[in-house]
Amino acid sequence: MSDKELRVSKIKDGTVIDHISGGYALDVVKILGITGKEKKVLTIAINVPSKRFGVKDIVKIEGKALNSQEVNRIALVAPHASINIIHNYAVVEKLEVKLPKTIEGIVKCVNPCCISNSDEPVVSKFYIKTEEPLLLKCHYCGVTLEQADVLGQL
Ligand SMILES: Nc1ncnc2c1ncn2[C@@H]1O[C@H](COP(=O)(O)OP(=O)(O)OP(=O)(O)O)[C@@H](O)[C@H]1O
Ligand SMILES: [Mg+2]
Ligand SMILES: [Zn+2]
Image (cartoon, rainbow, N blue to C red; front, top):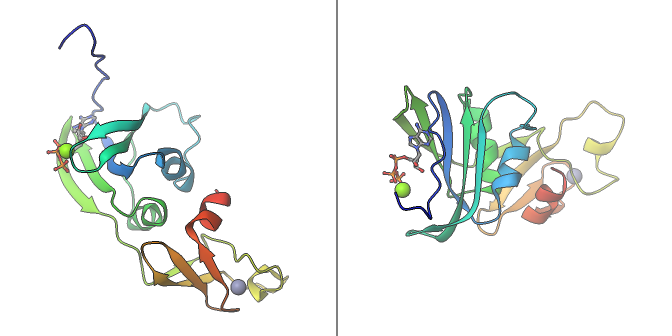
């Protein structure tokens, strides 16, 4: 290691979210509900050089194993992310993020008149119109949301 490099500590147990498109790491952190106040090591690298993508972001979360719902949420903001489960400092499992067929209760419809925004106890629900660029169609009112609409809600 040269004197121009800085070594960040490895995490013992937790999750590394790798291959996030450059600039989207903070969105990933937000969609997971992580605030930084959890008293656990959280390492965020933004716009680091990547052979595969030119630049990429990485998020390393100590002491947290993601459930499948959390992995699916990540797909909304970082469809090419790979999830690495770390145990005893080593990668023990790799998961690809994948958009589920429907997105329920995570995103709000942008149509103020949509029944999912009324006083009725209706949980929002969207279908995937296209994955890239991300377009979601509301199950109730048919309105289309773009990824920017999702990011703006985080
Ligand atoms: N204990 C650890 N603490 C923090 N980060 C780790 C730890 N172990 C691995 N990583 C990071 O997790 C990611 C995946 O590690 P891996 O060793 O599988 O790399 P890789 O071979 O480059 O994987 P890929 O083919 O998915 O790019 C890398 O970004 C690596 O730096
Ligand atoms: Mg790699
Ligand atoms: Zn709607």
